[in-house]
Length: 127
Image 1 (cartoon, rainbow, N blue to C red):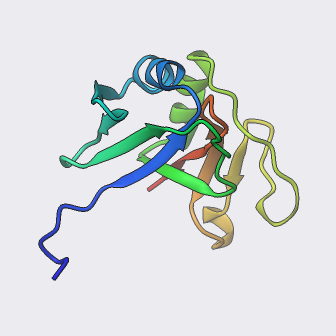
Image 2: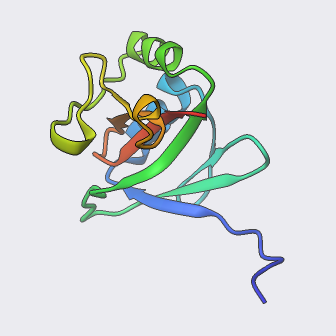
């Protein structure tokens, strides 16, 4: 039944104008406006819908992952655009750049997390 459905992901933010600036200007994504929110166009024709929610609570998990070929380059470029990466301790300990280096240890990909202005968690991860 749903096999032919064109599925899409969505999440909320507390301020559409700030979200549009962040996703369009800082991250360089194509952003379209709709009556209900924002659409992010991603490679492959997919779209992510961002909608406003007055009582928005940021997700406590990663809502959007951006696969990259070179995580060092991606982190450096995003950092120059003002993106600040999260720092974690414990099992997912990140280095001084904010990168969890799991690939060399067989513990998943190299990945770096950051937040959008609404506090939602996003990541870049090395393919």
